[in-house]
Image (cartoon, rainbow, N blue to C red; front, side):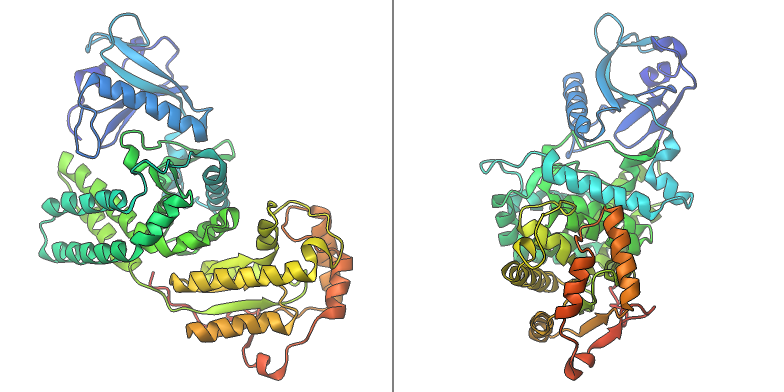
Length: 509
């Protein structure tokens, strides 16, 4: 991105540091330089004013460094250590030395540059384990780790949400030299404006309900790392509060979009579903498509800014424009329910289906506990057929699942509901919902010998770590009280254990 400033070049000398230096290198982005020393890394802000950020003065860069430290300690306290002055002279700087500050840097514990998940993905080493860690870490952060916007603040108001969306289009347009690309951008601008107008009441309601929070703000795979067997989430947005005080679904949309961009549609839906299980925020799915398009255009803008700083290929930006157009599309909708006793493999099989068919799943074991104010892995202590598992609570759980399914279908996403569905009224509730919505209805039937069910249930109870509390006594009650599928229901049945239980949802991705 051009010649290094004298100060940055001076920091590539061991004499600039008060600690041993193993190897000096640097990473440059469109807004910062990061100096790598071996044990520690130092991040400096570029003296820029790009409209959406302003690092043009020393005081502004110092304040941005302090904010970066505060924000990132929420998710990576072991890695964000201090804000340090850079003193001396530009030709011979000293980090955390005496005298007046020439600039400031965030001091961080260094991890290998190739540990970031985008690098792991490029090397073919990204796994479902990484995706699961993103989902669970982010769900916990959104539940407990980030402050909620004050009602009097501008954050999360529909007009505030629109500003960065509109800014994207204004900042992208001058860099497009291709008429076709400009036409695509115009169509995306029209779609975004229409969607914003349609969704504005929901956006306002989401703020009132507390879903606008001080988030990370830039959650793509390049800002996630796998170090010593655990996920490190770093590089929160510090320079513009409007970009981090956002609806949590906007944050989810960034990672979701990035996985889709990398041709991991299966893992995008795994990530989304695990996050939804952790937060219960199914209502936010109505905003996912809008925010995913916005996030794709953010990456297009960044790619164009980088190309402008160091003239080069704009292909990456055009690829993000194509992705944004794909993300606008609503998939073919289906409503599928499982039918099978405890231990029949419903949850394992439907996990494969959400990845393959790009669907949203809800689990009765999780939602039953959520309704009772319990975490998914909490033990309720309820006896068979009573308390959390009594008939009243069971009716409430299935009614809640139907409401969630209805909302998700209305938001334009295929649905799978994971529950035993051992009673006809439970199955009829969802068949009627599918008819009202005009979508195909499927019963995924899991029919296994009782001996196998008993073995699996016993093994799961010993192992723990699952939302289900079913034991052998629960299984015996299920067997005794189940209502078999009738002839009419069997017309909707497919084999839940098969490789192709129902036609692809043709999600448009």
